Each structure stands twice: as C-alpha cells, then as structure tokens.
Length: 464
Image (tube, rainbow, N blue to C red):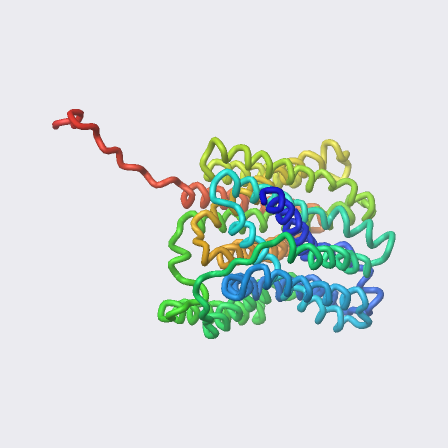
C-alpha cells in the first residue's frame, strides 16, 4: 500500500506538471502561432489569456466539485476534457478555434489541479509524510512553471507550435490508464451544492482574471480594466453575502479565518507574481536585447527549473526542524535577491555573471516557496474541505501569475525610454523583487506561531 501511494503521487505530479506547463508554454510559440493563423492587432495574446481565464475562473468551483462529487472522479473527468481540448488546440484551423479550445483546456485544468492536490492531502497523513509528498508536488509545480522557458522555444523551433499541444496527449492517456488503479476515491460527507455561490465566485474570479490579462493590451487606467474590476468587486460582495447565509456554502467563510491558510496563499500569490513577471521579462530581454535564439534561451534557463527542484527539497528538509514561517520568508528573500540580480543585467555582460546568478537564486526561492505555501495553506483543511483548500491555493498561484505578467509588462512599457528597452526591463525586475519582499513581510506576520501561555509549576508562582 505504501508503494502504491507513492506511485499515485508520481501520477498526480505528472498531471500537475502538465497543467502548470500549459499555462505558459505558448509564450515562446506566439510569434509562430500569429503567423500561421493570421492573428492581427495583438490577438495572439489571447492564446495565453484564454487558458488563464478558464483555469483561474473555475478553480474554486472545481475544488468544491471534487469534494462533493468525488476527487478521483473529478480528476479523471478533467483529464478526459484536457485530452480532447489539447487535440483540438493542436489541430486548430483558425485563431478562433484555438482560443475556444484553450478556454476548454483551462476549464479542464480547473478540474484536474485542485482535485489532484486534494487527493495528495487525503492520501498522506498530516506531518512529515505529507510534507514530503507536498515537497515532491511543489518541486514539480516549480519545475513546470519554469520549464516552459526550457521546452517551449526548442519544441517550436524543431517540430512547430502544434507540438506543444500534442505533447499533452500521451501524458493524458497514461493518467487515464493508471489513474483508476493507483488513486483512491474520497469525498466530503455533505452532498449539497450551492449554485448561487458557484455563480458569484466564478463571476468574481473570472472578471478579475479578465481585467488582469487585458492590462498589457489596454492599460491599467482603461474603462475595460475598471469595468472588469468593478464587476469582480460587486460579485465578490454578493458571494460573501450569499455564503454567510447559505446552509451549504460553496466556500465556508470560516475557511478564511485561518491565519495559516491565508498566509500560505499569500506566499503562493507573491511567489507566482514574482516568478511569472520575471520570466516574462527575462524571455523578452534575452531574445530582444541579448539576442538569444529560442533554442539557446531554453538551454540558458535550464538552471531555473533545476534550482526549483533543489529549493523544494531543501524546504522539505528545513520543515523537519523549523516552523513554516522562516522557510517561507527565506524563500521569498531568495526570490527577491534573484530578481534584483537580473535587474543589473547589461547587454555586454556574459552568461556566468549576468543571467546565471539571478536564475539560480530565483529558482531556489521558488521551490522553497512552493512547499512552504502549500504546507501552510493545506495544514488547516479538514478532510471535507481538502479540495476547496487545494483550489484556493492553486487559484492563488494562477491569479498571481496573471497579475505578475500584467505588472511586468506595464513596467516595461512605462519605463522604456529613448536609450532603449533596458530601463523598462530593469523596472520590471525591480517590481518583482518588491512583490517578493512584500510577500515576505506578510508571511512573517500571518504565519507567526501563536504565543503559548506557560502554566507555572506548583510552588513556583511568583508573588509580586
């Protein structure tokens, strides 16, 4: 039984890698997609944004569906949908077809990701064993978040952009063959749904994601951005009001009273903003200013996912001796240092003194934050809320990624001057460093261990 659990974890990690990878792998393929399918006016950006919209908008609903309908069942259903949508993406004959298939692919990921992580928490007992499992999960997530830079360019160069979607097909087939054998079924005790809560939270998150992904195109001050955020706020208020009065809420408001859950998700959000924003800047700077080819850039950034794996295992080892707070704060500090190092890049600098130090620090910090954030966010979840807590944590990562790209792209456009784009990229890296440091400050406050009152021993009570 012990071996089977770890084999199941391997299967779930493969799914996590595939889901996270697909959120960014199209970044380096966008020029080829734009030429082949005739996108105009920046429309190719929606190949990336459509996935984030479907994924981020439905994550909380997907996590709750997993709790109520069955986590393995939801995971396998999402995998079938992911397989079909990946095939449609690879076979897309028009830009509209590709964007529609990417939305469906995002929806399927919103079913797979939280159900997979909730299966992990339901399979492994709280404590060192679960921390070890989450370390493996976090290392794969960190690898997937950065491996897009390693895989996307070379794959597009050699086989064409359609290959980045066909890559999912054999992985999905393996998941469907072995999933029913290696994964156990679990669900919450309650069997009630909350349609109003589902509608309002989906609308709130989808509107927020829509507003964020359009920022690079229309700007922060545009009417479109303001309207999207206004809808998100109104829907969020309605959601909170509905949940406070529902007999079977989709997201019980008591969930957010946990400082560990809130702090863990703050760590995840800040780490995602920093790494996605920096990855966007590094991709553009290395190819546009330093003149790396996609293939050379893929090899140059291989150190980033490798260090993410190293950071996650270092965090797992540290959690055996220390509380989660110092591990999370240290991880975010490493990320901030990496962003600042990348901000000192010059066009004349070599790889060893330019890109390499910043990528090493950024990757190591990302791996540590992935473990610390997930452990903290899931530690307080009950068995019936495991899928929901997983959905919130995954949503924090995806929303953070969308916000990070928006902030970085805005910095690049706003700070570019007559001397070239270098100042804009430095501003983007410095902004990512500031986000990581702010996250470290928030984590230091929210993840503090509650003070324990000492009970004096009999006969040793001090008399004033």
